[in-house]
Length: 426
Image 1 (cartoon, rainbow, N blue to C red):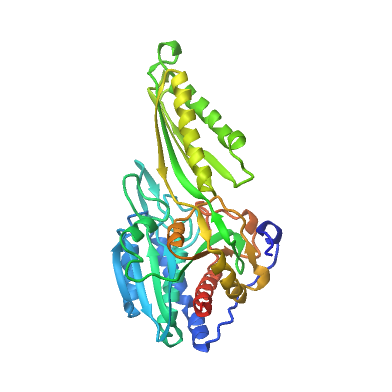
Image 2: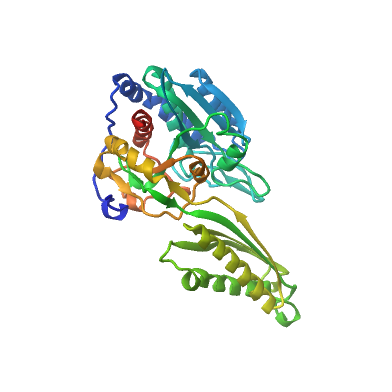
């Protein structure tokens, strides 16, 4: 049994070293590192938001075409897929990387820091690969080149999936893995399995983490608009105060998890991320808008939380004479690692990282739309440590932080892992 991350993060770890049989493959992996870092830095300096990854897609497609792969573009707007057929018969396998960045203003002092800005939700913001998708893309580009130069060692066919919009699409749009599948990603060539990775700041370089079965939470976006009636702040009885109503809703919603959900079955979270209403200290506004997130690991629990959220918001508002607009914008389902595939490939991951450095991730309340791919075919998703081992990685700036930092010595480990998984799959 794997030991949980919280018990083993104090391990001193070095770089991982795969035990791949082919000397040519090992040489190709070692030689690809300078390009890998160059690609990552280019992508990091030129980030693009979800469903806007135009130049990123062009950069990826140009590379894949230079390798002689069959390349498909324009899937789910800016998705790119490269197909490589090996010289030996074998299975079809898929490897996936996500390509989009976040509306975060970078604060990391590196020469290739992002200076890109754009408009997001009506505000001017910075754009940053604050979740490491630049690393994911570079790792998969490198893996594609390693196998393209060693087709003789490849048994079967590889699909290199570069997926846009993992961080969520703008309201009113479709995108991401769900749209790629809707537009026929697996219609002509369906893989036997799909593999994906995600860099993780809370793990040191040389360590990975995953778990069989449910691993990452389902996620939905919550939107509540409370409509009252404007009045002067000195005469609150002359209107209906949506700020007070919103506060009551927020407090009441906390009882859904603490008092109405059986958390012995699976964890769940409801959090509000923003509340906006009013503009002046002495004017009670007409309305207040709240947005939040819902996370859980059980689809029945998910439905129950949705029902109770609407019930509370509606009844609290009506009890105070207000009206409410209630919306849940469905997000990603639970990310589940196929148990048979996990058991089959665990030894491959241990060959790369060492048995002591393949850890149990536990349940993670973050979400991933890799979940859609893993619903179609058996999937295996794991976290790659990217903080310097000598650093205080347990307190490192997390994914989505403006201070998010990647130890570039870790990137080659991702390539080794992908190559080992492909080579060992039978």
